[in-house]
Length: 471
Image 1 (cartoon, one colour):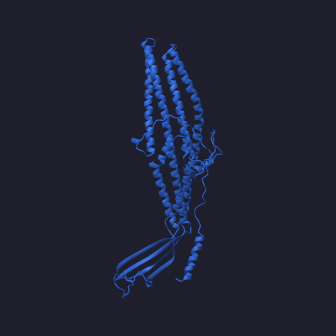
Image 2 (image 1 turned 90 degrees about the vertical axis):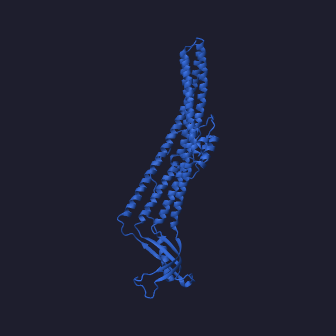
Image 3 (image 1 turned 90 degrees about the horizontal axis):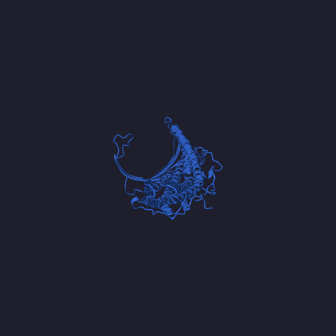
C-alpha cells in the first residue's frame, strides 16, 4: 500500500471520528418539588453548603473531648467504613478500565513453532516441504474509532458510577459518625440517670430509716415502713436496669470504633452536653450537600449514558488495526530486514440480525433510567422529611424541656413539703411516697428530654448532609 493511500485512509477515519455523535439522550435531573423554606421554624443559623465540603468534624459542636477521640477511632478502625472504602476503590478501578477504551491497545507477541503440512492439503505446492519451522515476533495495534460515542458513553457511565460509589462512601461515613454520636449521648444520658437514681436510693434509704424509727417509737404504722421499703427497692431496681442499658450502649460504641467489647470501657461522666446551634440553609441546599442525593443523581447520569451505549449497537463499529514484525523459517539471522512483514487497514462490523436482542437492551436501559429517576425523587423527598422531622422534634422538645424543668422544680418542692409535714406528724407516708415517685419521674423525664434533644440535633446534622462552611 502506497503512502498516499495510507494518508487518505487516515484522513477519512479522522473526519469520521470528528463527526462522531453521542446517542445518549440529554441528561435531565428528575423534577422534585422543592419548597422555598422549611416549614418548622426555630432560631437556626444560615449555612453555605456544597456537596464537596468536608463532612466533619461536626461533632466538635458538642464540646466533648471523649466524643472527638471516639469519632477519630471510628474513622480509622470501623470495619463497615473500611468495606465502603474498598467498594469505592473497586468502582474507581472499573472506571479506569473503561477509560482505557478511549486509547489504542498495543500487543506484542512472539512464537516458535514446528509444523507439518497435510500431504493432501488443498492447493499445496509440489515443492513445499511437509515439515517446516516458523519463528515470528511482532507488534499489533488496535483502535476502535468511537463513531457513535459508545466507548465515551461507557466511560461516562463508569465515571458516574464511581462518583456514586464515592458518595455512598461519604453517606456511610456520615451515618456511622452520627450513629456513634447518638450512642454516645445516650450513654452520657444514662450516666446522669444512674447518678440521679443512686441519689434517689440514698434519699429513700433515709426515709426508710426515718419511718422505721417512727414505727419503733409507736408513732408510725407498719404500712409506712412497707411503703418506704417499696420506694427504696424500686429505685435500686431502676439503678440496675439503667446500668444494664449503659452496658449495651457501651458495647455498641466498642463495635463502632472497632474495639474488643471485653477490653473496652468508657468512664462515667455526668457533665451535661449542650444542645448545639446547627447551621441551616434552605431546602434546595440539600440537593448539593447530602451524599445520598448526590449518589442517586449520579446513578441517573450513569443510566442515561448507558442508553447511548445500547443504541450504538444498532450502528457499525469501525476498528483500525495494524501489525508489524519479523517472520522466518530459520532461527539464525531471524530479525532482519528481508524477514519484515506488516499489515494495516480498517475493519467494519455490523450486526445484521439478533432476533430483537438490541431493541430489548435499549428498553432495559431506558427502564433502568426510569427506575434511577424514581429512586432519586424518593431519596430527595425522604431527605426533606428527615430535616422537617428533626426540626419539629428540636423545636418542640426545646419548649417541652423548659416546661419539664419547671415541673421537676415544683415536684421537688412538693416532696420537701410532704417530708416536712410527715416529720411534724401532719401527713401520712402515702403523701411522701407519692411525692417521691412524682419528683423522680419528673427529673428522669427532664434528663430524657435533654438526651432526645441531643439525638434530634445529631439526626438533623445527618439529615442536612453533615459538613458546612465555617463562614
